[in-house]
Image (cartoon, rainbow, N blue to C red; front, top):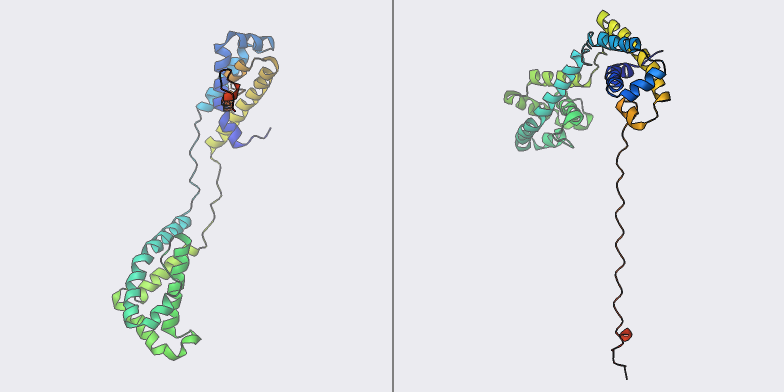
Amino acid sequence: MDYSNEVLEATPERVTKFLLGIGAVAAIRTLMAEAGMTDDDIVEGRTLLLDVLAAPRRAGAAPDTADARAQRAATAELDQWDEPNYARYGAALRRRFPDVHDYVFKDLAPSTGAAAVRGMATFLARLDALESGADPGRAGTKQSDKKAVAFLGPRGLDKAERKRLQGLVDVALGPTSPLPEQTELPETARRREALVKLRGWFDEWSTTARAVVKKRGYLIRLGLANRKAPQRKAPAEPAEPAEPADPLDDADATDLE
């Protein structure tokens, strides 16, 4: 039978509880003996369990790649860069080149995560367009646009820095490589084989137990049933308020004239 990894990895704990339940409650052991479970069957289950425990589960490689780590690092760096530097370069352009400032920072503000990457890509693309004069809508301001971009160079936003930032944008946008194909290690195959044998034993005898053990408390002890969640009592309905006594019903009341 083909078992999922989740089912197999849950089996040692279930078998441990199953064996403890049989050993601790004589009535359960008697019922199982009447159903054909011998001491040899119990020893077999114990041996299979110990065999699994002797082949501990190896921690698999983290589902990650160097590319994915670099992508996250690039996104984080751009996220940290935009807020102080948008403010810094925005202030410089606003004073000396207000028209360029409005062009570069139109609908652009510091952000986080994917929005920070998108914003940085926009910021760099607009600076490149100003420097090259590629935007036909600004054909009449090419000289001043180029001068504005050059003005930012000595303040730290030169071509080298813009190239570095563009590299971070490219890394953040990918592509990244998929996970390498995982080769099953010999000890992993051995553990799975031991788990399959243990699960086969458990399936046989847990099915038998469900057929012959009828008391729910015993099944819970074997790990084959769960305790029922306590049901909350419905809040008692408030008592109807007593009607005030009618003074006219009082025998001593004075008749109204």
